Amino acid sequence: MANVTNNRPLSPHLSIYKPIPTMVMSIVHRITGGALYFGTILVAWWLIAAASGPAYYDWANWALGSIPGKLVLLGYTWALIHHMLGGFRHFMWDLGRGFEKEFSTKLAIANIIASLCLTVLVWVVGFIVR
Image (tube, rainbow, N blue to C red; front, side):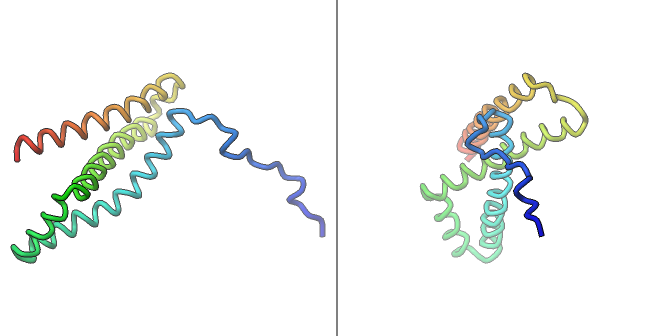
């Protein structure tokens, strides 16, 4: 039996590709989607703590209010907003719009800038309201 894999072309390795904004945003969109699973478990844990009574709720608030807890919540907020904006980008593409190279590159860059700015805005408003 002949080895048919010898005649097949090899795929180029990732080190050959130059990272471009749309490629990076695609990868980050997938990562934030996965991160949202774990962040949602934290939200569910907090809600269960709220339903379990004051002692457990106070402990959960202490854990999420600590510096590491706040950093995790900050990352969750950013992942949620970034993933949402990326979803809007994908929805626009589903409608057949925004495929031009320059526009999609600008949109990818705008996605990261807007997600960072909106995350800061959400946290500033949260601290003001609190």
